[in-house]
Image 1 (cartoon, rainbow, N blue to C red):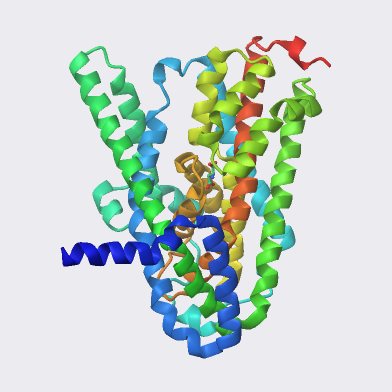
Image 2 (image 1 turned 120 degrees about the vertical axis):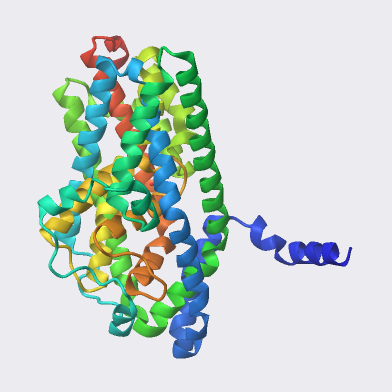
Length: 434
Ligand code: ASP
């Protein structure tokens, strides 16, 4: 009884915290953390463990997130529908994702966010994860994709082999679900449901961990500002501008794609604006799906095509996220004082493209995938390290970045859908005339 009362007391004491908007709380954590760090200086350093705890919680979920969401992502590609339309949309999604990371890296290269700042050397050296100096050659990166023992790779959190294994496992599962032998098909369907359930449970955990994010962000940022002062604010704004410019460029690339198929870009924008705006405010491709479907119908795409390509796109095609991943990796590597080598950039393109497949279409999931991309280039997050401090900085403005990247994620799905419908001769062109 006593305990129960205590719990109720705890709930009402912190009720305001859980009831208030998470985005506002995270932004408040960023601003208050910066102020506390600036005003209190070294005397605030005692809160460092609260930031470290946040980093540990994030690390805890990374491998399960990759494993289960990539399995469910790749198993959702129905092989029986992977006919011409499927192949076309899949190829489009993969190419535009890789293209998007490259655009992101190009903007990062041109604008070089974070170049004038190296997070405190004490921090950098306390990190056990300074990127490997002699970056490995392309062939050895390629070979490291293949696990000799997937369970060992999972246990050691080796990102590339885990991605590879989860993808092919998912594809195998997709095939088995359509087996002629009903027993095999039903076993596979059960296993798919288990993985889907596990992915959902992990995302529930992500949600809970994010409830702690305001405190984690506050502590990480306070420590950064206490040690570095105001000079970190500029690079963060610089990075956000780089992301938005790259997203705008991606939109122009879509325009070129449409024009090359003789479809009007402005007409597309006016037909798809509801979905793009909904994605911006909801920060969720999944949540935007009903609006995306409606917009595509208004643009003359038959349901038979959009009901396949749009949900698939909301699951595996995240061009905006891919851009964000590329720029963030570049920014963080600058902040820790070891700019990306060419080989590391190639790895970023590869892992970000795959990470975009594994990113769930819900708010904030791209930020979790960033941990995996950082891992793949030898910059794992670790408590008290410079990578964790830099990551905390980005997370502080994640909501702003997520709005832009989600609208480009959705725009990419819509453009791909229109292009595939046109190439199949199934687009109602009368809807594209004024
Ligand atoms: N919020 C994004 C989406 O739903 C995913 C991300 O966080 O990058 O598309």
